[in-house]
Image (tube, rainbow, N blue to C red):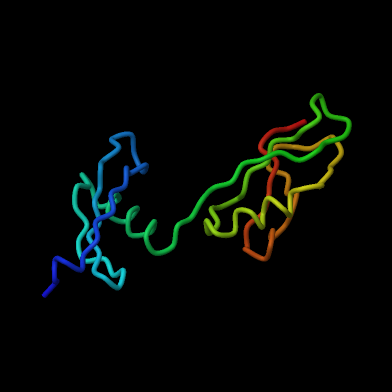
Length: 125
């Protein structure tokens, strides 16, 4: 039985689809999820569960490019990474320089920070 004095509610706006459900998670005093409600579909519950247990993020940034039509080349990760690794990846990108020509999808850094994720060019230049 949950002692209501020891519960905590956290509300999230689901970003999985444009509906933007307000989803509330009820947790016990130890941080265990007891109930998730307010989601229109199961994906909303999964989103909140992931946000509470293992938040992931996509990262987009730029690196210096020489010989391109612009001075900076936009890059993106090939997959999401743990939220707490974002600054590590940004530090890895700092000072990276490439030379044109670069094609969209070219790998700029393979297995960045040992996360099993590549940094790839998001445009040709």
